[in-house]
Length: 226
Image (cartoon, rainbow, N blue to C red; front, side, top):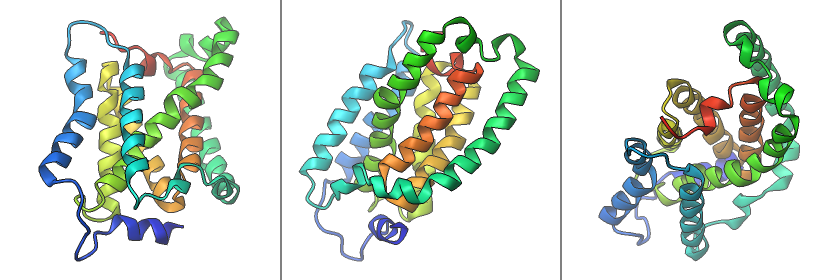
């Protein structure tokens, strides 16, 4: 699967006709450059409607592209082959995060679970569906497929994906969100590159996102105001 996706990300010597470079550059600037612009507005902006609108646009473009392999949007079989290393890495990271939050932000340690367990349960269900999966479409599936001929090579695509993903989180006005999402963006983009499955990448993304909300760091990832 990695070989197939890597071939997709390496531009052929004579690539078929696609959108004009200037249009692609404008599209990229709008999709991935909008969050910093919105972040400096003097009023609060809910990022979810912007994400959903971007996701709808990306899906329309992908569905109209005969070169796009729609199986990349699910590939449930790939999850069965990758869940063990994903969970092993997550368990190690989770232990470190839990210990650090307990030491550095003890009042927030599992605060949402302790104070609002029903809200926490709702977030655990809705966050992967309404936020994680759409982000995977915009920042991994679409970016990898749409710009694979202009961002040369798989490593550059992974880095571009992580940078765009991190940049989107400037809406939350804190360095922790930007730093964590860059590191996570590298992992999720690499996982998508390796497996060719959005489902696998989104599963891993959901694990870490849910961990942030559970352990007490959720406030860094949901408040779009100043």
